[in-house]
Image (cartoon, rainbow, N blue to C red; front, side, top):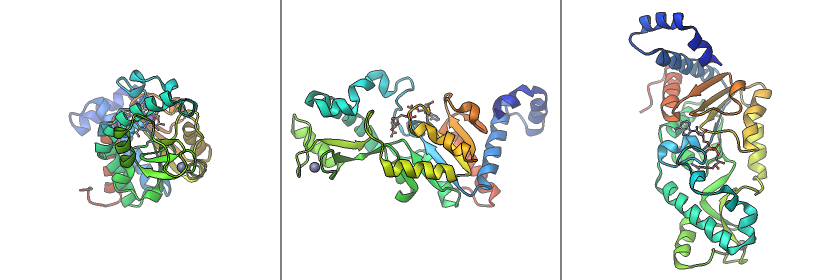
Length: 290
Ligand SMILES: NC(=O)c1ccc[n+]([C@@H]2O[C@H](COP(=O)([O-])OP(=O)(O)OC[C@H]3O[C@@H](n4cnc5c(N)ncnc54)[C@H](O)[C@@H]3O)[C@@H](O)[C@H]2O)c1
Ligand SMILES: [Zn+2]
């Protein structure tokens, strides 16, 4: 990995520090890395950004697996699709957990990472975002809907498991306040469930196929804030890499695919992406984003 190779060349780093002023060796290494990734992005034709819960933690939405994340307080086994279908008790438990998360999502705003990704689109360097997130923050940051592939659905809508009818989430949240039963469809009496994909539920076919197609056509595939452990989404970096793309992983913690990455950036998504996209603008002769 580039970061670690460079850390071993302590001598050249000291020279670099002397030339560049009083930055720490780590800062020098990180800046070199940002510049390298920015150079690759500037010369790429089809950049695909793949995001997970980590892109939204700086908006105040906890991820699942980090300390303090949702899986510390809830048992994922209680929230499978099968359980939801099987019992009213499981559905009420699901709606309670989901309502807690929705309250946070509803007031969250895009952070520096979402804005930097939207900026990449604005300057003509983004093919699309493939996201595991259900919070709608990429669209809220200014990306057109057709540039965002939501692999795990959206928490901003509710769907009927019987007839597929979609409902506005706020309307169903209102209903929940007035009833002690899990909500049902007004047309077919089917079960209503937030339009997100639960464990054990089938992935959306069109979105999944489109995500693999875009990943395989990309020349640079940038992962941001995903532990890369949830399948089949976690195979996308592999598919992109096999088809010839450069793979960049930006995540706070390690992932199972780190050893495959052409560049590995460990750090905060907002800070790192802000710097990388700022550098892309400079390289393209554009003014800094306002
Ligand atoms: N915001 C959301 O919509 C949201 C939130 C929680 C969970 N989820 C769902 O949960 C599933 C979890 O999978 P996942 O892989 O996306 O998330 P995850 O919780 O498994 O992993 C998140 C990763 O992001 C990293 N991270 C956290 N904050 C970061 C930051 N500020 N900068 C850089 N990296 C950061 C962590 O190190 C971790 O590896 C997804 O399928 C998604 O549908 C969505
Ligand atoms: Zn229905």
